[in-house]
Length: 637
Image (cartoon, rainbow, N blue to C red; front, side, top):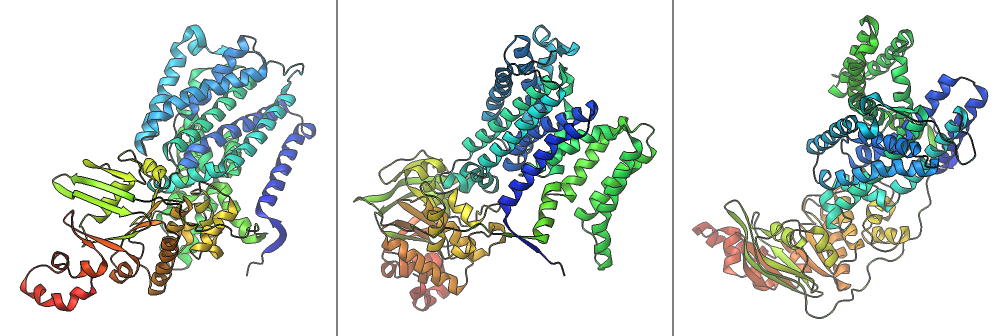
């Protein structure tokens, strides 16, 4: 049995101590070990560390394959080099390098980030290809394929020899690491993680998808430009071909192999991509390391076979990839000629076998061995406050229509909800209830008709605009932020307040004790309540609940009824879609019934359940259904 060691430290404190120790040791290396070649590798590792922290912003946090990062790195390098040739001071040259990558990166981000998956990757690949061609053809400025040479400038009055420049790069890496942690652990960083899991919920809760994507891409582009500027000063010679396909693959390998969404992963990846090309020149050392990698990869499938089970693809694929790399290391006449293939095999093995990278795997091991003290949680404050409602209508939807092909999902529907009212929306499956809510909340754009929320007419088809007008919603199919904890899921949705207020919303829905639990580890019922807490955290005027009791156990339904009752008492207007008719009858002041995309009835629960059209919509109109009306009709609402 594994015994865990309790150091009495919080995980964040331990991480800071380890980081400071790492940088202190790296800074002391030139004083203990004299060697220009080794110092050059350490400097390159620091530069690549800055570069990969920037790439992780898009590949790791946004979850997008960014193939333009090497090109942005090159633009930053050329921008700084041209500035130095013009005798610009070093700090200003670094800023020029940042701008040379940031501006094209922002221009690329505006159209490209509206795409997803392969389309985004292809758009960044096109940008990378065009950038290399541009640098090659602009001979009057960049000197084309012949290359551009510069002399390393001084930092004010300090002459930057190899050691001093290494320390400068190390300082830049330290500041970049610290700034990236602050940024990506803030509400901005939480928003980026949230939109990766559910862009729809992110917009529906007023967080904003596109603007956060663009800001994350711009941050990564700025770091690429900064790293490029340091790279140009370090080597003193630039060629466009150096920023092409090979570097692109190496950088992706570094991020994936080191570990995504983790600055330690970016540093580990930088160490790997710095050493790997140099290892290829030492066949014995390279073969030994690949053999060690094969032995590590084969441990998992052997353990599975010993338990009399078949190994999964995730277990066997890394073995095959590392086996191929070992065959090349042992039998290829010139290993360096196979570098692209070897990089590709390593990348494949890392993606399949180490989904969280080296840093993620080591972090998981450390958490099993060391017991860290949890961060203290503040006392819950705030919660549901009485709504400051005016008189009149909280929600008005006029003559809404929406068709999908030849099917009219919503056909000329008008719905008016009085301020402070809890309004039920029921109907058979496929009657158009969720489509109507999607039109009101801005997920769909209506073919015709209009929506007003608290007197404000939001932009049709805009979730953000509907949320700004004062609406919030939950979803029929859960939209959790799987990578965030319950507390973080609330914090990212809040328009006002801090951790105490977020704890208050968790207290309202009975999840205060599960604040540190990740959404991916929560039960279905808890996620339903968490969605309601997220929506409440935006402090809406109109709350739309889309089948919140679906799939819940009886005790959870009772909790739900109590929660909605407390929301109702606070005067918040509620639009409730629900199939549990006893829930609708207990909570709703009025009920609208839909069938075939049209509203067929409106009234109190008692009035609706006796409406012949409603009974026909649920039971049909044949003789058997007519005989059953008297028995089953009372169960409706």
